[in-house]
Length: 348
Image 1 (spheres, one colour):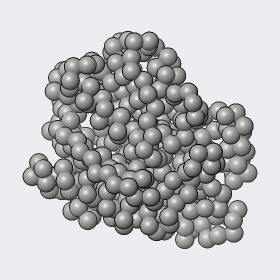
Image 2 (cartoon, rainbow, N blue to C red):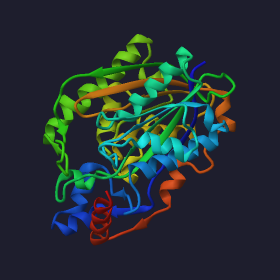
Image 3 (cartoon, one colour):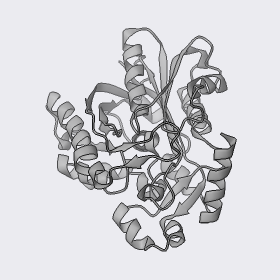
C-alpha cells in the first residue's frame, strides 16, 4: 500500500482585507470581494518566505508521521517564489528537519502545481522501492503587482505531504494519479521580472477549467467513477469561485467541496492551494471515504489524484486543524502590507 502517511500545513498569521486593498486604489472592495469569492488573504511577514513556510509545514508533517527524519529519502519543494534563483530551498528544508545528507532534494517549478508534481515523484520513488519515505511541499508568498487583479488574491502559505509504503502507516491510500498538460500561456513571469503577468479572462475557460476538468474527467473515467462516488473534492483555488464552478461542472455538490475550500479565508496560496485544501479534508475525513484532488498550474497543467482514507487516519490527525489555524490572525493596513513586502524583497 502506497499513500499519504502524514501532512502539515502552515499559514502566516497576518491578514489584509479586500476592502483595505481596494480603499488604497479607490476601488469598490465589496464588489471585488463578491466577484472573487473571498474577503481577505494571508500575508507573509518580512521574515517569512517560501523557505520558512516550507520548514514549518515539513516539521508538522514529520512530527505527525512519528518517523526518524533520517529515513526520508527525498524532499521536493514546489514554489513560484523560492527565495534564491540559484540555491535550493529543498536542501535547507532537509537540514532544518535533520533529514540529510543521504537524500534526494530538488526545487520544482510549474506555477501552482509544482507541489503536486512532487507528490507524484514521491509516489513513484516509494512504489519502486528506491526510497522508504518522500516529502513534497507546496509553498508560496504573494507576488501580485500593486493595483493588479492578482494583488487581491495572491497570498502566502504552504503544506507538506509525506508519502510512504507501509500499510500500518498509510492514512490515505493513493489509488491513482494522472496529469493533463498543454502549452497554454495564461500566466507567466520572465526572468528578472518582479511581478508575474496574466492574460486576464483567458486564464479561465481555456486555461483553468480546460485542464482541471480534463484531468478530473480522465481519472474518473479510467476508474469508472462519478462525482457521487467521492466524499470530498479539492481543486486548485485561484479564487473562491473557480473551484466551485469546476466542481459543479463535474457533478459535485457544495457539501463535497466546502471542507477543502480554503481560499475564501486566506487567498490563493499558489503551490500550496490544493495541498492545504487536502490537509483540511484529512482533518475531517473518515475510514473508507474517497477524495479527489486536482491541482492546476499555469503554463499549463493539472495533476489529479484519487485517495481512499484508511483507519490509520483516526490516530494520526494534525493536533491543530487547518480551519483552527487560519482563525488565528492579525489584520494589517495596506501600508504595513507594503512595508513587509519591501523588507522581504530587500532581504532577498
